[in-house]
Image (cartoon, rainbow, N blue to C red; front, side):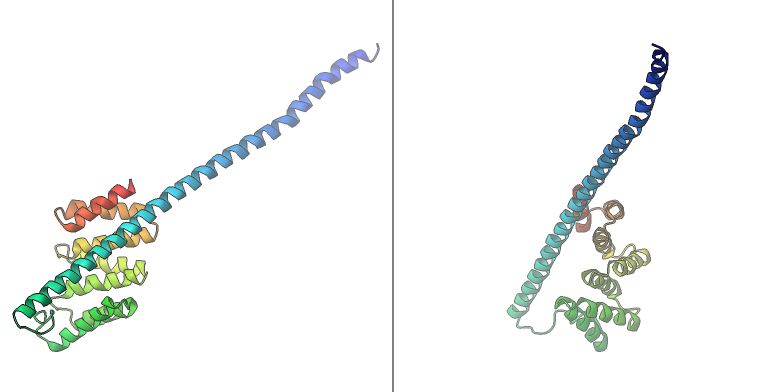
Length: 222
């Protein structure tokens, strides 16, 4: 009986000690659950971005194939027309007055068409240095950037094509250059940058084929 008051004093102390030791474990469990939720959200966000990137890449590949088919069809039609008229010669014959300029352009284009993109980019760059006042300069600058993109030099493609758009915003190739820029940004996983570039195409170049393509790409980014 003499120890009863002591036990009564000790029981609250033990209860407080139990609560004190239990609280960190509960807090630790809450932190673990919170961390797991954050990690899961991050994984879901990454999966959504990867899916968007994959859809945009597929759309770019389909568009590139469509353009190649259209180009080949145009060449076939032109050759057929020349045949019917009894004409022969290269389809680029009237582009240049200087035969050397013509040869430099055709050499770079042949490399591009054959899939030798790094060499084509070098060829287009050499053409720009040699013929800075060429009437086909915008076309050559566009293909230089496109060759860099096809070489997976996305930073270089963006740099070259942004310079083209800045220098020649009214060029017929400006909207197409922005499309390649957007595709390069997608490849660099800069989806926010690609969205801004696509919106710029729609805003600044309405009614163009590039604007229609940009609208489709923006739908994939939603």
